[in-house]
Length: 343
Ligand code: NDP
Image (cartoon, rainbow, N blue to C red; front, side, top):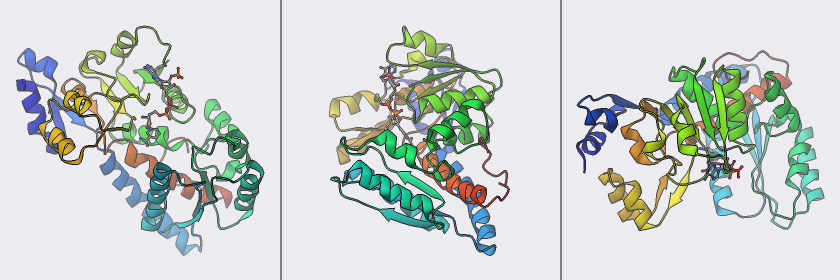
């Protein structure tokens, strides 16, 4: 292992690693590890007091989760969202129709949830079975209860820079950047990935925060050179460890949205070569999570989100935040400034 690699492993518990590029020149600069879990806890503490204040006014915000069929990954996601609601004292309802449900039967379920006064937020867990018209279902959700921010009306508000319900993952990234005081005004931001759920709303939020935004995708020419120009990189491609250290300008901030499960030992050897503890953990469990950013980027970035423990925890926090926000807006109450992204 290199000296820089060894140093990377000595101080992660302090929230810092060291830039290998500078280490080669005899200068050590710390890479700041941006903990999403710590920020999630701050957001939960703020939401708890907001929820208590609503409770004293007789209001208990409620989230309805629609889980179609028995996709194991979807079940895990929905269970963790419901568990988070319970932890914070929000009401939660789970509707779990079988995978054979038709589009019109599912539309009837959404319609019922739209009408229920005890439901402030509706999430339809994706993906839906291929025979169900996903667009039709997402468009049927009352925009005022659309806590995932997927309804075209909310998307339009986001494009226009108006207050709205913003998709949870990019909203979580904005909270992380804001609370970590990463400068965005005039920053060159490169978003890799252009999905409706992550890349596109992420680019819009950064543009509204005065960053100069480049959006990359699978047809982008010379991706490494484009990413190397960035002060801020957002990686959201679903490609394990694809953004390697040579894509990153030393000192840049790197936000890793990707969550990929690795089970191939040769991949794990490559990804964790400089991280013996993670490699040992992989060997013990035969599985590990890795982002879209190679772990060695910790040796060159100025600031970096870890995987796990970076963006992931914030996605659920923003879902709860959107539910509380929706419950206030539906009742014509003002929204406090605690969680401020696009409010
Ligand atoms: P999608 O598959 O919907 O979109 C992937 C995007 O990446 C596409 O725009 C695609 O380009 C682009 N892309 C794919 N391969 C390349 C490549 N080789 N070079 C450049 N661009 C490429 O993924 P999502 O947006 O839904 O998710 C992205 C990642 O974020 C995944 O790892 C997912 O697990 C994770 N995720 C994490 C969440 C969290 O809570 N932390 C929440 C949601 C997602 P094109 O459009 O040209 O096909």
